[in-house]
Length: 364
Image (cartoon, rainbow, N blue to C red; front, side):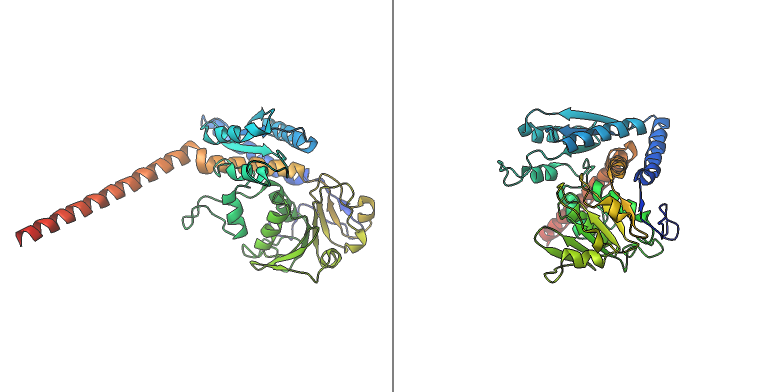
């Protein structure tokens, strides 16, 4: 969809507040249609397993939303609650190795930044322990490595298996695609946000850092603002910006994303320019909504949770299609057999050639 016909339309006289559900609906309708097609073929819907080992309100709520959305859209969902955080690793490995499981999500924080047997962050270790064929969050090392190098396929040069992207960061991209003057799909891939400046206030590994990379991969000049530093992603390059301030970055940006996980933070609305798109991904409101909506042309998205869950479902379906669907499993088996056949033929040819050479040497 080109930027000339956005789903969300700004009001030049004032700011508007947008329910992200209008963006999520089309993706969830697509999931329902794919599940219905699987049923027509006699194939069960994909199974997502959630691992919950904490009582964090946001994590519990996310698990509830996931379950309700999967049930509503025809996907299978199984929440496995664990009383001891130490048991998460074994539960995760069991899910990775279970052929009935097509996707796994771990609801963080488990250990947070507490010192653990695996170092400063056991949660990072757990993220990297999710098999890439089951990682619906797109946060394991394989997907992160490819994201930061703008590698879009797992199987280059065949390019049939797409890399997954982190759900929350991807939800912001999909929202921006439907907002006015953000994405221009008439430009080639990698240039859809060419000429746009974006500020992302947060550099967490879950949202801020991958989002900055994703927007830069789409052609934007992205300022990544964290508590002690500012970096710029642009044209495949990363550079420190000691001369910039949060204010200078926000003032020059047509898109601002806030993700500060504290109730005390407020983005000064006087920094926001008319016509700016502001997306809040934090569980707290990072901006004074009333003041923000007084700015002409502002598009404000206060919550992204509905689209995040839709992206989770979309990632699950992609994993199923690429790695677990009977057709993909049979294709992989045929390729393995073909490879074995080629290798066997090569081995036979080498062996026969060696025997012939030995025979000739003996006769001579």
